[in-house]
Image (cartoon, rainbow, N blue to C red; front, side, top):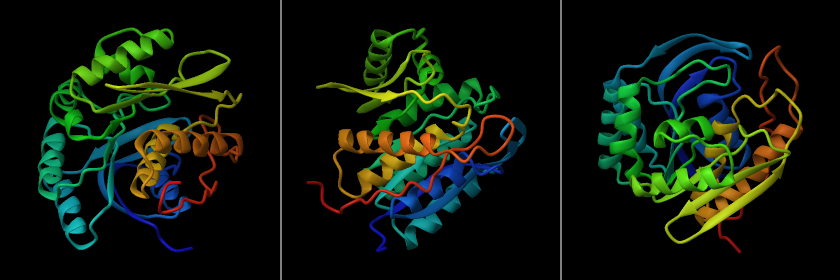
Length: 270
């Protein structure tokens, strides 16, 4: 298989391999692209929870991004866990240096088991300084609630929260609806000119660890290969649904999904 594009991933590590930078690399690779990385934190975790989080120094995160990208320039960037204001500042500094247009932010704030992964000051910095520099932000329901200070109970609330994020400077928003306990899962794409609802079957399984990381990396990969942003979201959701459906049933808690769901991506969108 010929490599179709290059993706830089800025995110935390997951020792269990289901989420974080490990899930990102697997996703990008399965979809036919090449992944470079800048690790923001090292976590000790398994499917039952997070034991510890060791942050990487902000300057070293900056060095990883710049030194790698000056040699292998990415076509697109995916950003995951940024645990402090200082890290966010250095990431913004690196993005301004690189001038890459296709940047997707997955605002990782809470682990699947409930552990908080980012402090309140960093949340504010992310909202005020980083969101406007991305082409797409992909929060789940709890993350969208934190970012917009609203309670989300239904589809109308999701659209309201998405529009608040647009008002905060986001260009495109995909709010993931998996946390709402309805029979069907509705993910909602919003920008200033349109609203698109993606409806998916809900699979009865606890093995959904890393779905958010995987989705944002899949969307980034499709976008880097020339897909329009809305189509990239649609294809990313299909990839994740297939990965959930065929999950390997590993671990005793929230198990990983199956990243070996390879989908062919043409360079040009037809």
